[in-house]
Length: 108
Image (tube, rainbow, N blue to C red):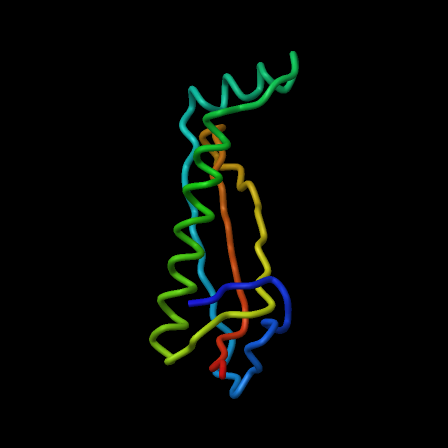
């Protein structure tokens, strides 16, 4: 399965458009990760805990989108868009949401 943010795959013309496919993932970042991330934001540096959660959420969303494309008989997904959002929860923490979408296509 070829996944691309571009609207075409060089050397593989689109033979058919099968529809929009999506994938979403919402993961909680634990309280300690939130606390240490805030400290790092103040003093500088990277938050390894958030980076791990971000990669995990992105992979889950991409896998979900790819599975949906395969179910349609696609060879690829083009025009992929990846969006990230943090969602505050009433308990004072946050959740990370990653959504991906693209067009499932049949390639030659």
